[in-house]
Amino acid sequence: MAKKIFWHIIPEFQETTLGKLFENFDDAYQFNDDFNKANGFKCEFITKSPLSQVYKVTIEDKSFYLKKYNISRKKIQRYLGQSKIRTEWENLLWFQALNIPAAKVVAYGQETKGWITHRGILITEELVNTSDLANIADEHPHLIQQADWVAKVSHQVAEAARILHQHRFAHNDFKWRNIMVDIKADYPQIYLIDCPSGMKWYKPFLEFRIIKDLACLDKRAKYELSKKQRLAFYKDYAQCRKLTANDKKRIRKILQFFHNRE
Image (cartoon, rainbow, N blue to C red; front, side, top):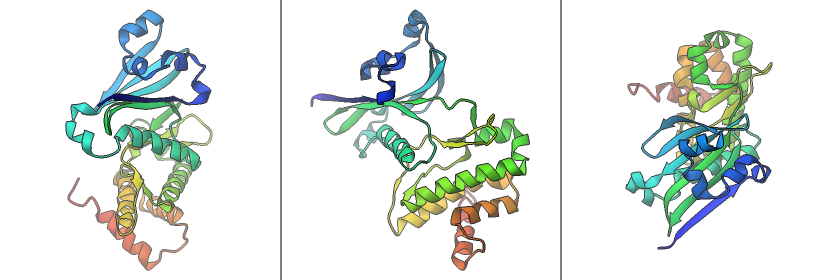
């Protein structure tokens, strides 16, 4: 089978130094420390998984996250439909289309042979002055202790979750570590990141996925927030002032979702 490469740079970045540096897929995928040193760029390894590696690339005082997928490392993944890297960039672009704040996509693409994906790339712009909610709880607990700060963040998370669910979409990994917050702004702005498993669902599966999303959020919330704050989040999400019988039933399922699984 012939190799086929798809590569796209968002128009506003095409004429930038980054756009010219990563003009094609192979240049982006082969970006390494030796190239960095020769050209005065900085590249920092962040993390890796069995399928991907993430690097922080700094060019002209602006930073970007370069995520490289190598699906061939887990061969079974090559035959399971659309690649996770494609799902992730499509989800981030869709979040932006819905006006849900998310990591800004800079470039994306993949290499395929037939319908099998072998490699993939996603580049996003750094969210300056942000930290994920889990890290904030660990490193900046004073913010979690501020009722007004929590209320502002809670409202935005509830709104994002409601919009996604209204569109029959479940994040499927809606954890605190996947929600970034601007910790230096007067008004804490949230951003969604890292959503390679999110997708649309239909009945009867949608309700289960909604409960899972809300349970993922509450998994950390129950240790950091009061019952009153957690209930306020749910009422904001459900846009109700008083819980209905169905709301109470759903809340019980949320609370029981991770029972004996932590």
